[in-house]
Image 1 (cartoon, one colour):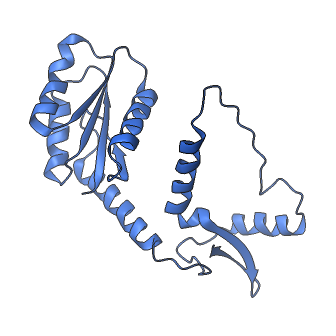
Image 2 (tube, rainbow, N blue to C red; image 1 turned 45 degrees about the vertical axis):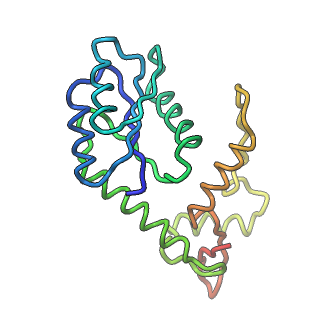
Length: 196
């Protein structure tokens, strides 16, 4: 399975090892654990994960929170796992069943395979429009200056941003999702989504 499993963890117990084992049993083989400031008495679980499963362990000396732990893992993956485009995050306490995690990745891989075959100009019937979307779209066509559909957004980023990586990430997200590379038209009295 061409996916990396990310497990952010603070003060884990033996469940983290059984979680990794269950994921390995269903075909996962690449694990990144983020030790998010765990105490010394918990380091053995991370060490065992590295020894038994070849897991990569990234360490925060102090607790920075789950969000920062995932960012640390994603940064690592971008730099060190370019051949692993799929990532799934799993809690280390066994609450996510390995079979369900596998199904998620299989659906993602199926989606990506199918998306690669969508031709430009093809109607995306796999992404039907909700009636609400049709109403909003038609209203925007009648009132093009309305912000109802094209909502202007301003975001202030307080840290230094690597604009090339940000641009690449946005382009990759758009390229991976036909829904984002589509536009709406009205044809034969019906609003449909068209692939660019």
